[in-house]
Amino acid sequence: MWFEKINKPIIGLAPMFGYSSHKLRLKSRQAGADVVFTEMVAAEAIIRNVDKAWEMCEFDDKERPIVIQIFGNKPDSIARAVKLIDKKLAPDGIDINFGCPVQKASKQGFGSVLLNNPKLAKEIIKAAVRATKIPISVKMRLP
Image (tube, rainbow, N blue to C red; front, top):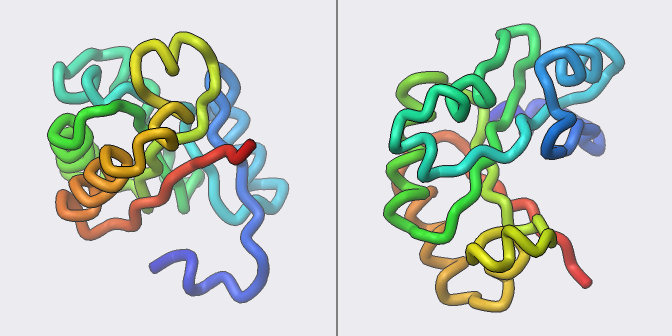
């Protein structure tokens, strides 16, 4: 695993919606970031093959290690998206967003609101882990 080869605290560019573009990720890697993340992409958009979603996931090998962040609230959809991303892009990891606090995310049942439902959060994580061999991480924000 890529993160086991880093023998120091890991410095990374966190996933930031609207900011984690290819250019910023590349500049961050050039500036010494050990890992970069894409902005969050809807698992449902991935499984529906929405072009914009796939564009948000695209990366250059110079950005590696790179982790693609997804969001959603259905374990099956998360698992299907993970499989598709792994098969098509083979990133170095996939991150599940349990940290977005915005009202739109809360109303739709994803992001930080999932921390209020540990059973569903656990099901989502298990589904993602079962769907791939690449590392799965979770972004959280604690109050």
